[in-house]
Length: 452
Image (cartoon, rainbow, N blue to C red):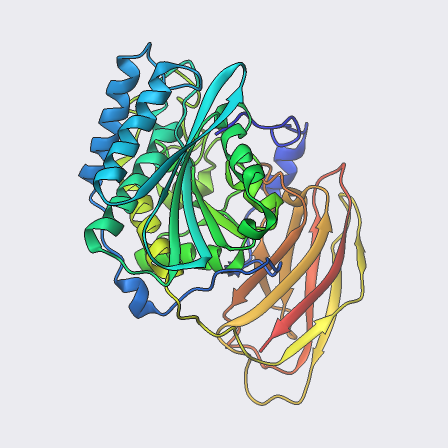
């Protein structure tokens, strides 16, 4: 993963205390995905289709990591762009794919005076007008072998591709895989690839899945919140394991999904954390050590074979296969149906001020609200980490939708949450309550909607 921008890594004096004071309490709801539309999004398929996804052997993934480690050791200790270790890494992956029946090609570009390489592998068959692609950057920084960053993602994508070959999968969509060069210099390989695609080729993409750092030694389980259907696919996988997830914010714009997203291709992916520190709440939820970075060896010489959490790598590798099998199938799940109640009255959110509310009146229904009440929220804000959001039932019961977080540095809150409101009468005045809990940023509640 590339180094963060100045904005995404900034810290604000006094913010942590204000955030911590409101980071707990309320009844947590399960995030169901964002509401932002994307061109030609992929759609999640039936559970029966998803169940066909294979278990990815952890030993196989780790064998690839061992090979990448040996390649680095034989080539000056790294696999960086322009160095012999990177080209040797590309050659290793390409040989595996060629033997498995893929059509592979090396795409070259120039960066920092050196030739860079992207490896593209196509699995035969599938609708060429509906391309589902999975990718990971294969380069390391110059200071080390880059086994978690990003041997982990590269090895998992490689083994998932080999699993496609072993199964002789016949997907409805066309499957493509990519390993990117010069990511650590600013996503240069993936940018070169996307920029090389004519508009007619870009329009054929059903989605791009990115895997950058998925074996962090003090791991979190983070899911990109870009395309709603892709996000839901990964969340469904983890829900099946009983593992809670969080929305990925540390790597926003810092990995190879960004060039795809910038041209309108639906994107999604997984991440286990870099140099942000695990909170006490996250340690309670996932295990590990609070107050310590998710990856203490991020961009360091100690990012070696010992810098991997096997459980996280195993789960995330299986999730890669789950997403590929699920999203490459042709069947679709129909969109949720129900009656919508919406408020489009904009409400200003004062900076570090009192909470504001927006009401929606529900009438004419019988019985209680559903166990899967959908709450779609559209908040414009310059620092979403300041924002706390609650749904208030007609009797005043509060359902916490979003906590504040000093690490949540993205803009806006455009989400759909699911609330078990089955104990609440459906009719009455429901309210969305929003509060900005720290200074320096402004926002507006543009709209929100209940779907019964």
